[in-house]
Amino acid sequence: MVRPLWNRRHAPASTSARVARTNIGLVHRHAAGTGDQPGRPRNLEFQRPCPPPHTDPGTAIHELATRLRRLPPSCGPVRLIGIDGHAGSGKSTFAGQVARALAGAPVLRLDDIAGHHELFAWTQRLRTQVIEPFGRGETAHYAPYDWHARRFGPLRPLPPAPVVLVEGVGAGRRALRPHLARLLWMELPREEAWARGQARDGEEQREFWAGWVPAERQHFTEDPSRPFADLLVRQCEKGYEILPGPAGTVGPDQAITYSDGPSAVC
Image (cartoon, rainbow, N blue to C red):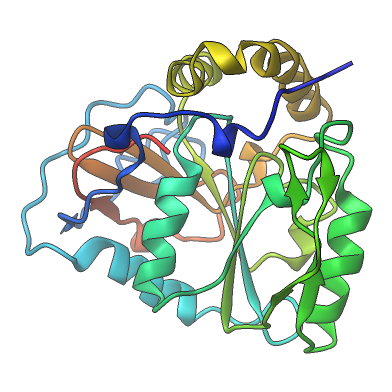
């Protein structure tokens, strides 16, 4: 049984590990095309280091935001964007930067939907509190989980904005994918992501991680997200690199590499 002490989002962390940098640049290139389909790499987990930015700051994330705005709605009037990846892979920092580029788009953090005894058994809660109201064009109301008090809090409104980001482990699960306009996967090997997350959270979260690792491993074994990702997001020394994902909804002629500001740990 998993018994985390409290939400890893509230665990002690250094300031430097929390601050998202804002020096953003953009590099365009066509993908190398080493995979089964032209223009798509076969395995992006161990690609070469990201190239340095060559253009003015502020371009990359805004370019991505522009592309997301142009997508057709996927859940009522909402373009629901899933940001998935292993714990510690940088989802929250990346989601925050994209949300700012979208002029303050709402971010639904799955830590608010999950709970101590429901690390991954939250599908029905998400469907009832968020997906179904959005489908009707209504404001959703969800009860964020308080990991300190170990109970759900009062309802919080979530408006059906043009773009809503859903970030967290399991954001690309099969029950949610039909409602997503795009699925982004943070491309970091699980052992590296987990090590980074554990270093971030410190000794006080050791009990949480002891239960989380096998739970996450089981989840992705039974319900993988990466094979269905539209875009892969790699975080490197000079920022982010965004490439077409295995789902193949972005054609080879649209392959773009984004190189954002200095790397930050979410």
